[in-house]
Amino acid sequence: MSPSKKEIVILLEKRDYNALSKLTLIDKKVVSTLISLSYDKKTRNSWRAIEAIGFVTKELSRSNPDIVRNIAGRLLWMIRDESGGIGWSVPEILGEIVKNNPVLCSDIAPIIASFHEEKMLCSGVLWALGRIGKINNETVNYAIPIILSYLKSDDNTLRGYAAWALGEMGNEGSAAALENLKKDTNRIEFYQDGELKEKSVGELASGAIERLLTSYK
Image 1 (cartoon, one colour):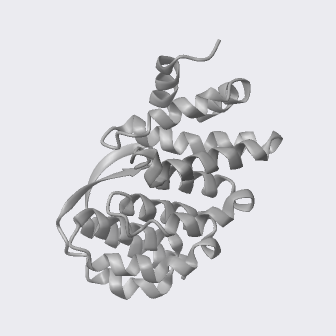
Image 2: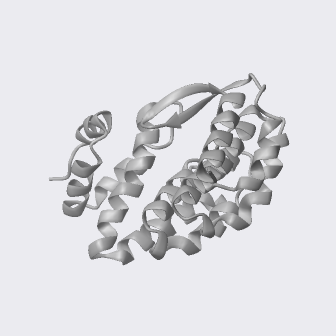
Image 3: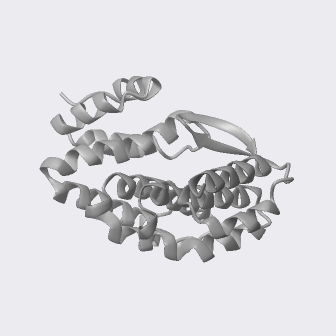
């Protein structure tokens, strides 16, 4: 019997991705349930579902990498027009898949970046690039000029996400541009370390600068 949505939510509450991985190895439908739980990014568990998908695909790829590629292909279909616009969390999910499967899925990173001009997807693209860049910055370094351009966005969320992403990617040359945002007091919701938090753009920029300076000491 497939695990119920309630059982999966309980594991997300515990952030028990190991248990979710074990369930997924038994029943691949767990991934579909996690995708369905990822849509409402105003909730912590939706972000944990996004994070969990990356984790479980890493385990799946050990025995059947084709399944992971098929999942990525399905998500790419969802993000396109014919899916009816239900793929608003897809950039983040794909970012987690690439982050956890850098060799198998590195070719997907440029596709994720290509969606940055879509208003509803842009923040997810920036988040995904930051997540990938922390693990394998060579995969997404080409996107640094794109990310830098969003530091001047009128959208508070895009400025904050761009600042955070640059810090994750370890691009020392971004520090000067980030300095301009240190006094930006506009606050946004941001998922970090398993929790959905409220942070100012300035806090995210300052954190990014600190990480950059630490990396190059």
